[in-house]
Length: 176
Figure 1 (tube, rainbow, N blue to C red):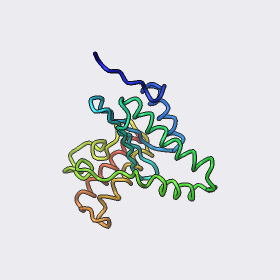
Figure 2: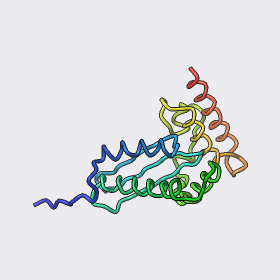
Figure 3: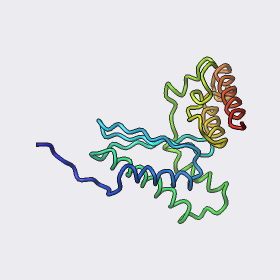
């Protein structure tokens, strides 16, 4: 007999995904990627904001829907605490506070981020964003990757040139 687990949250994955898109708009995030591993009940949410990439992971609950909802609530409550209950009034102070609070969730570079390629890849592959995106998403991805690949940050000059070319190509294509 198969054992069933009662859900922690009542919202479906589909509803939570919709809620995430609304929250990302509120956060002024420029991208959202949700990875779900159903076999292991693991969820990973990745988004860019103000040139920083954030990663949230959860595998505490018995199903991916609950883990996805847990991440949603964590981000939403932290953001609401800053925006509605915080004492920060101007936008630059808010961004600074947001960075400090969410800084523990900054993406650490993995091998795929560190491999810019030889310059022959499409700009979307280099920047790690979809082809049908916005100028702000392109800028945000470029800024996040520049913090790793810029020669002043210890990156390789050739990799940075490929990254810059991908950025330029993306901006040209999106203008069309």
